[in-house]
Image (cartoon, rainbow over all chains, first blue to last red; front, side):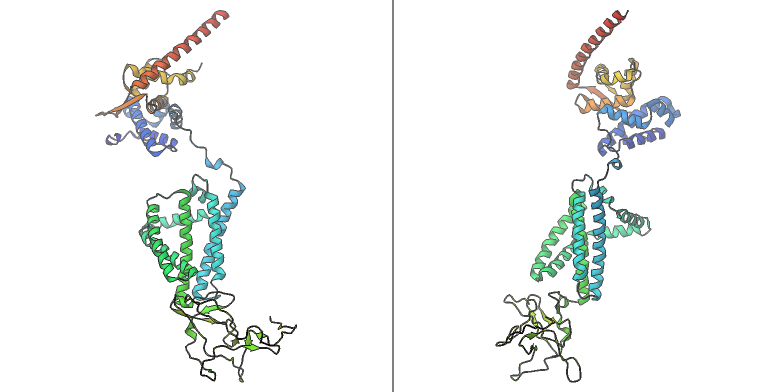
Length: 397
Length: 111
């Protein structure tokens, strides 16, 4: 209504703005309505003084803006302003939770980065070394966050109290202050729908790594795309708030870190067949190193694929190192592969001690067509038939 | 005695009484109350009271645009408001009667 009329006198505008600030805790629409009415009222008062009206004149006549606002609030029966949140004492548990959120959150980020680098360059050969602690830290950070924000009226304000959260806010502030900051943020925002697809892909990758089933992962991906886009549109529209929003953001962080680690795995090995799968100290490894065919055959022309040595007392010897007459490691030259129909890949059991160490573990196909974990398939078992193990067993065992 | 403290309890009644005569906008209601003798009445109190009575359903409003000055948001009594005024006036008269009697009696005894 009043928006069509000429701008109020500067003194009136100043006074109204001050009153408005004092009533800032009221709902926006109610505040706008009151500000309009107060301005109309002040315009009438100002008209008494004509052009001579100043902020001092208005304060003389009406009292300070804060007093005017307090009087208005009391007479209109409006709620008193909420006390300053800083005066609320913060308990030990909450401070501890804030610390835990920061500690585990940054641990997850650091360990996730280590796992990514480790996997990409194959430093330790065991992605679980950093990957598993990263996931544990992430779950703990998530749990602490949920505990921290549960029951809070303003979860975002609560999260701002977390140590180092201010640092993130400062980084964001710095990016915004840069000449390229605003376009960069707009670009990232415009990529939002791509992220919805990416996080569904990350979920499918993680599913594949856990269950190792391509059809199941594909189904997970399709369902995840639908869910992710639906959730993304709701979040973008501001319909997801409070603890649910925090949960969504935690899941986002988890999928981002998990997706990056999985992407590192794929980038490091090109395909999935090279994924090193820790199982009882022995690894699956790709067949790329065994190009050559068998070099040793038995009397019936069948390739020799493994060697089993039994000691004088008939006990199966393990981790036996074989060397030829020149002291060179003795290698059969190839290993029997296991073809896994589910992945269309072949697996062999790699021996971490070297290709001249026997007996090797074998990998066999289960009735369902999947390769089973590596096993020791000794033809006579642990003990040669008809022999008796002596009390003084192999000290290595 | 501080009249502003007394005024707090009866401002509703005073505003309703002023509006019974004629519809009025905020600034106008303040002026009429002061002209009637309530010189200490505060602008913000009157405006807050009008707002509260409006939200309680005792008043209706309409806006009269103005060519030169600000808009005028007029408040007028409706049925609920007139009923409230009647009941408040009755309460006031009884209270004022009791207090007047008490004060006059006490004054005579002291004299």
